[in-house]
Image (tube, rainbow, N blue to C red; front, top):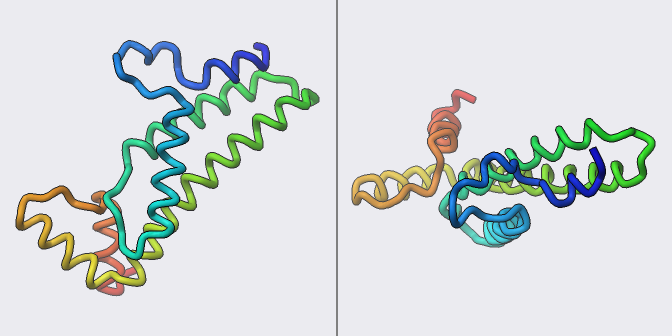
Length: 140
């Protein structure tokens, strides 16, 4: 496998059947935007779980391609740095959300309850909501 295959085929070619599918660059751009917005917003914003899962899938695919390259290849280390940067982006986004939940747990749970009662879209994922409840009850 050549290094150009990694640059051009970040997403899985077998999964390109859907029209309107985002390119890897668009997914990264959306993730960066979500991260910046979450980082600078005073409260928790609606979750971007689909973007996070898509980017994690791309990272896994890229890592698989990287394993097929020789470790002495300089370009491999450059691409590994990009994979590490993307992992940081995802983890920082998730960490920021958890920090907000820990800081404002009572308010966030009240807001989520109100959204649920009014049939609005919840801002937290199921896992984040469970974390908030556990944190509020002191069971963590």
